[in-house]
Length: 216
Image 1: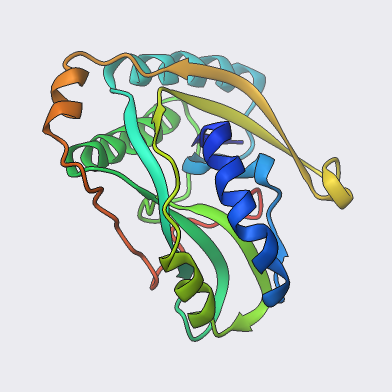
Image 2: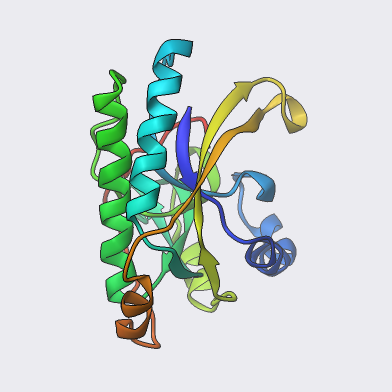
């Protein structure tokens, strides 16, 4: 299972249309657009008993955190452009929203551990996985292509708890099932949005795997 922010359908459609004529230039396995998301935390072996505690804890986290103004802009790779195995889009946002996203991810991970669940300990690197390569590849061309992309802005107002089912998706891949969703309803959110600059801050992370998991 994992907890995620899902891009707005308009953002997904816009990026999908941008990538469509360019997919053939890269020898990679593309993630279906319906599975695009920003992973906040990944957990494994969730029992029914722990699931109830986790859902309650996630609801508490969401009530304290604000909606985020986001757009997908530019791209990155893991672990580096000379031997890339994961290609991703960058969630771009203003500085205050970026810090709020970090607090949200931290809260989600704390909710998991206090519910008795084990989480991946890698540093949180916000990204939307677009493709994977079976072998390390030079990804400079992909990065150049993504430098020209800036998608529509959307308001991320909820997080989702998602179960990943192996062998049940497209081409026997993974199927994602939303188990529960939680509205972001923090206090003072209008102030955060007002303080964010018009041009989004973009954090690049080309040198880390950022908690990558096959569920994506």
